[in-house]
Length: 324
Length: 212
Image (cartoon, rainbow over all chains, first blue to last red; front, side, top):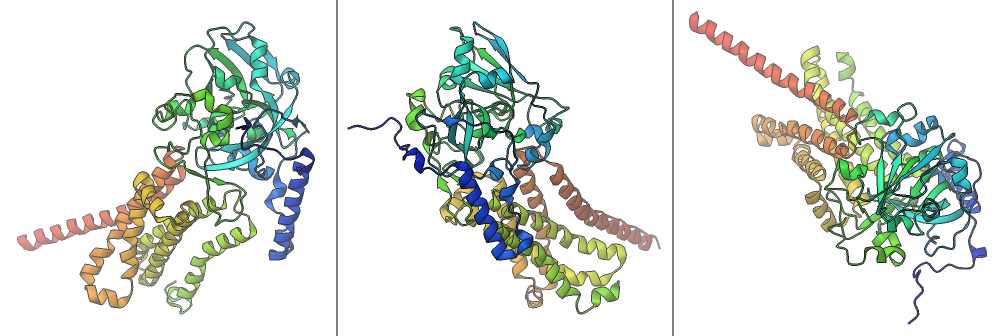
């Protein structure tokens, strides 16, 4: 039997897909019309209009299998107004409110450790390092909600190949910015700063692991991890570090912030898995934000967030309950 | 002040005012102004209001004793009932929006998450108090037993604070929790202090009588 490798991701003809800008414009129009009908002119400013407007950063539709889900994208206002980015506060609205203090230029990312060509890249070099692609990924937060976001960037593998890892490079650690002057949330002791994350090198090399510079066709808004972040779509959102400043290639499994803070609750792998519950709540279902009907049932969470066909083989033979 | 509290409109005004938070939330749902996760916003806001009404209810007796305004006690029952009302809305919102009203899931979740368990316990403990709030219930139970039963509200207050504390523990975000804990601490502490002072006074009185 012939089964395409990207089972579940069969795409219709590209021209049939509504461009995101048109989609969002329609949503805005509908929301405005609906609000007007119900409440008169007072309510004519629906939230959809509060999305930030950044410089354009277009990306070509990605050809990587599984990289463009057909799920309906979340409104940009929601994806940029409801964030976990504790460096700017622990409330979901804090990042959008406070991240304007983040200075994203000049910005460098140093690549260190077990590589033949350690280097410090300026953000403009990184932007030019490989062609930009648009990837529409599901994002599943460990807290039980999810979004669908069109990111812009390229596979992290492109950068990894440039610096030529040595045989000792078994893992990557991602170090993010921790600057008290720019990040009011650092005064809180909720985590040890800087926020660090990590991947096994084969996870980092997987084409779906995205080095991300933009979303919704624009450069990343500060609250979403400007000027560059990671997006690992089959893992819980916290695995995808924001505002990266350093990538270390190491031999031993590196420390990661949440597994340091609560090792029984957050493991190194943190793959999305409906069958392995968080100790304090179920992971079997999720609330897709923007599925506006308040009474809509939560949707079932998919194994590896729906990317099992692409990434399942990375974990062949592993006990995912043990390596949660 | 006394005449204002005794005014025939005092209770209706309080009733309408106490419904305002719920009204604003319903408007928020209809207008889509509760943010990207309206279910979460609803559940949390209803929890906040439960705690606020609980504090208001517990403030009545100290207020009466401090100010000598006996008439504030007129409002206590309505505030207590609104505490139970917002607690029911809070629990219902959780059961419907978070759990899809699947009772098996709710029972499993209550057992699994300590903060849900504590919140549910506080809610269940409030129900008999709300159910015995009317005058005839006081007569049936007898004033003493009724008062004993209604002292359970102190346990409810402590459970509610613990519920809020545990809920925020994930992000170690305790600022607001501390504010409510301080308020409840003062309101319950006042009662303890008064009782202790009363006991000391009685003891002194007893000594005087014995010596006399």
